[in-house]
Amino acid sequence: MMNKIRIGIFGAGRGADIAENLMQMDDCEIVALCDFDEKRRNNAVERLGIDIAVYDNFDSFMEHGLDAVVLANYFHEHTPYAIRCFEKGIHVLSECISNGTMAEGVELIRAFEKSNSIYMLSENYPQMKFNREMKRVCDGGTLGKIIYAEGEYNHPFKPDDHEFNKIAVCFTKHWRNFLPRSYYITHSLAPLMWSTGATPKRVSAMPVYSPVKEEATARRVGDRAAIITTLNDDNSVFRITGCAGFGAHHNSYRICGEKGQIENLRGMGEKVMLRYDDWNIPEGMESVNLYDPKWNDADEEKIENSGHGGGDYIVSRMFLECIKEGRQPEHPYDIHSAVAMSSAAILAHRSVMNGGIPYDIPDFRKEECRKEYENDRQTPFYGTDGSEPNIPCCSNPDYSPTQEQINKMEEILKD
Ligand SMILES: NC(=O)c1ccc[n+]([C@@H]2O[C@H](COP(=O)([O-])OP(=O)(O)OC[C@H]3O[C@@H](n4cnc5c(N)ncnc54)[C@H](O)[C@@H]3O)[C@@H](O)[C@H]2O)c1
Image (cartoon, rainbow, N blue to C red; front, side, top):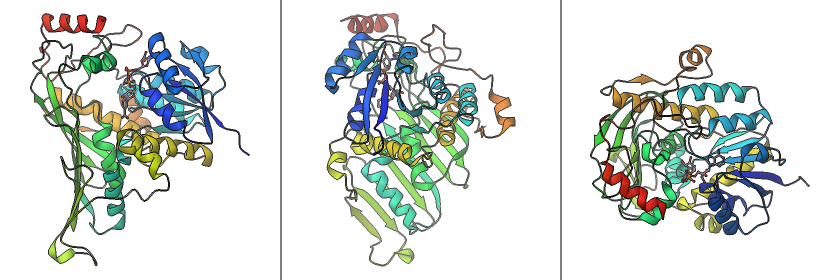
């Protein structure tokens, strides 16, 4: 029998969610957890309820003897740690953007090419029930060639939910306060890439500027969404939002082919609407089909009990399957798709800051693209090493909450 896959968790917030899902599988064990925040570390250990080695720094954690690492540290700081794993042949599951700058995208691909590690983007939204159904229908071919799709990840936050603020934002220079709307792109983009097989080649974006009016906030981004358009390698077009903050939370997706279209209906749970032209109705279907999709999966109960509409369990299972079968994950979970998504996020923000002009998305398999971006370290974020942002995070570079709003948030976070 194969030895159990030994997994380490880096980052005790979201990392604990993934650990819980992995713990349900027989062929792996969570053996170590690393976080430099003691309170977070202790909370995670208590929550997981298992005997586990704990570390407060990545160097010691790496000496534990790991087969795989889940990167759930700060959103924009995954790349250097992924590279450290590659150097030791340790497999990587990265939550949920691969690189925070264009230069890091180049570095990640260069290091990956020298490694035997499996790399997978930990992107759960394509595995939600309605997105799996959309892929099933696209693969069935009845929609014809897919030519257009829309993806919205719309996640407004309740202004006075300070318990949530304390967990999600923690300190005023935290990445969530400086997160351009286009950067958190994978939840709106990856489901479309998964269903259609397309990869963006060109990107442009416009901001929806509408600052929040909370009494207490340290969020430096006054935009509520970035409306991003991509032209893809199969000539299809996507319209996506990054992470939006309109009223009324939803994740919604719509895929249009030459013969019909499918979408999940906003505000109607997991219901999907599948429609065809009268002259293109497949055998046994209607022109308008409104239904609740099924999982069609042996692990249905575990999926139903897992977070993010079941996606968390399925992604964890996919990662283990790749390790056991000794293969890289399929599109768009592979490293090149992951880096293309990060490039789309970063260049969409550049487009926002430059009046909506389009940017080509580089293919870092090609040396000429690597050369073009290898020194491009523009970032809107503070780094753990004390580095400062070198570009604005908001479409209006002069926007900031008032000092009073920031002070109030600092008071809340101190509690
Ligand atoms: N797919 C999803 O649905 C989903 C949901 C939530 C978060 N995420 C992603 O997961 C990642 C983590 O999210 P989060 O909400 O837990 O973020 P967070 O910023 O709250 O937590 C990051 C954790 O990493 C620790 N950390 C950071 N750098 C470290 C270092 N160098 N050494 C040791 N510890 C370090 C921090 O102390 C913190 O506990 C992000 O990339 C986020 O985008 C994905």
